[in-house]
Amino acid sequence: MKKTAVFPGSFDPFTIGHEGVVKRALELFDEIIIAVGANPLKKSLYSVDTRKKMISAVFNNDPRIKVDHYEGLTVEYCRKHNIKFILRGLRTSADFEFERAIAQMNRTLAPEIESVFILTVPEHTSVNSTIIRDIIRSGGDASMFVPASIKLSDYKTDD
Image (tube, rainbow, N blue to C red; front, side, top):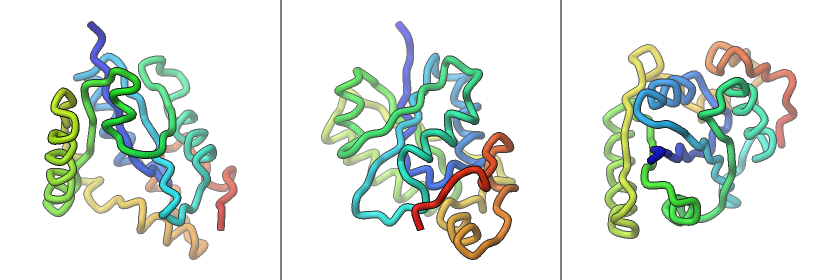
């Protein structure tokens, strides 16, 4: 049976930290669906479609990676697509506490779905989408924080 995980997130933008987690998780899973969460309550820098295009550019030669989007609860997305694993990356102990609470709530809502955590490599601990968005909004060069195949100048922001 094929092991599939969903890697949910806003990915605004997709970073080298996200890329590293996905590449390492491919040792554990046969397929990973990177699911861009559409949250109308958040002010995004890039549209959902733009974020999906960015991520697709990173993994366009790997058939084990799919890119999708969703609204609502991650566990409902998993149920709808018969996915048994949620993949999350952890940078810091604060991430762990936040993600643990979500994983425990997800476990209560959907006991058949398991959360799997992968630590980022130490050099990616400070790579944070919120800070990268601030760099981009301020006209700075954030290219070192996103995968090489994402040319930020090729993508229009929603600002």
